[in-house]
Length: 244
Length: 333
Image (cartoon, rainbow over all chains, first blue to last red):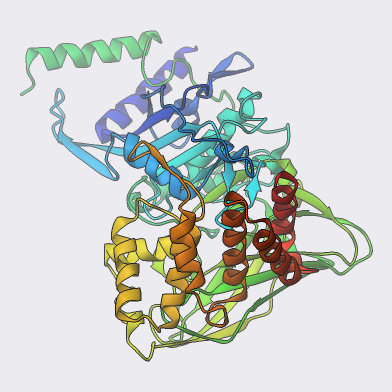
């Protein structure tokens, strides 16, 4: 790390501490699954926190419950793999049972040296399930890596660990997770550059992905109205350019 | 004034960050300059799609408030050469955007309840002349009931996907209108109530035809059946409750899997008047009956139900995925 880098980091840290705004990801997973791990890009380590630091967002990842047992029932001869799939309704119950952090923002007084004010912590909930996705009409999908399933408040997402890429390609798994968190920050697929950046769907980027945001995504994260950016505050925007 | 401990903590934090030992980032990343909106890559350019035709329709033109509305979407390759398309046309999957324009001209996008990240297998080649399709509910979304007031609503859809790096192509559908009316018996006003959590849950349950945890919603739906047994809405409620009970529900809130209750499911589903529900709901109702007949070992009734479904979905692109699922279910019967 160069002196210049350290000074930049220090400046950024001071700005973030002064703003005193963080987003906490409460991250749970089922037994038999794993969280996405850090990857190396050249000589650099990349993880979810660093990816979001590009947008001046301090994402604190709290790997919380790692031992949620998938429920299974008696085998149904007519549908022997039914417990390999999970519906939106069932995922809602998972969140209800396991989410510890509130939806939205928590505030606290934060006296800090010469600074005195209110610190804000926004919240996202993520869970890795040992399932595939089942659609509302009962059809079953094995191409889905993850989804943000609570667009009402933009507060929660899920990764499907039975997906063959999620459980075998950590680099894409990390990318997909950053993508879903992006929806919680109100970013859209049309933010993507159609080639490499995070808000493209994984099927779009193939093997040539980066862990970078497009200009539209960065502008949104860095400059747009806070209520339209931070998770847990409001419904989704879907269009580009962002209309809020 | 800060305390001594606060000063020490602050000083230690700064020292650790400068030394590179701590902080939110162990090292700065990325090392390129792509961290500002000005220097980052631009979003994909959007161009009109060629040799693709998008069409939409609903089963009928007039609905009651609270009545489930399903939209059929077809995507056709009008050319001779195959095109790479997103094979899943549900709004959840990201390629389809549904727009609803109310009587007063307010136009909003249907806010589906999930945003999906799909892998490359979600894409497929669409041969020249070939049509794919899907059918999905549009009466309820992340913001609640979509059609809350009587009036005439315009619907249109766009399909957008990446055909080549940095270029997205988009095609718009025809525009159609649906008329929303008050229910003659007032049941719609009991079901669709803005800002009411029970009404919100009831909408979700009708959308999913599942969700044991939506207790308030199910109570509201049961109230509809009890107070307005002859209402069109009551038929949809019976369908939703019956379908829900035809399959197990994994409830992590309670830590149990509620098994299928085919007896109660049958009570609800048999009370549905097929002529008063949409064809899509009728198909789902027959599949629910099929499931229970298989579980109960009633092969003749199961064959009858699945035979009816096969007739209804034959040669209809919007039911292609469902047909494949039925093949799978029948193989395992």
